[in-house]
Length: 137
Image (cartoon, rainbow, N blue to C red; front, side, top):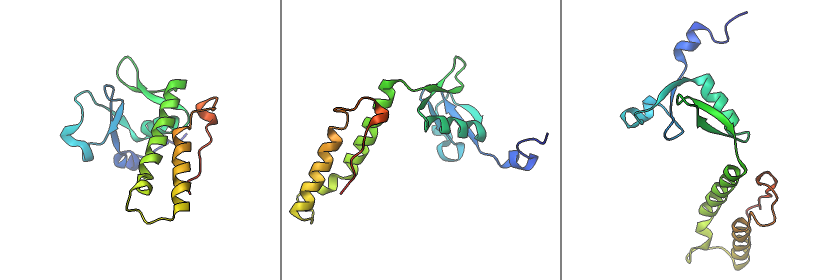
């Protein structure tokens, strides 16, 4: 069986670094000396696997040796992600509430209604996975 990556591929692959204290990834080219002191190198394939897991209901954690692992997200963690997304959507629509915004009264009401639905996103929702996100006007 042929190796998954050729010798040339492995020479051009990016090395990521994982910090168990921050549970975050770093690149030497970007973060340089600003990386936490506890970073451990991981390869591009491992990074991709972890990011895929993160997108599928898992969170990135660290094992006893500090290596990155994916852990099934708790209900609390998943609600945290819902709140983060809600806050980002509210932040991105703040401009609609400024006194000098040039939108009609009808549009202003639509934006206010949308923003209130975002604030109430968890009310009446059984689980984070069942959240129905309002559509921006």
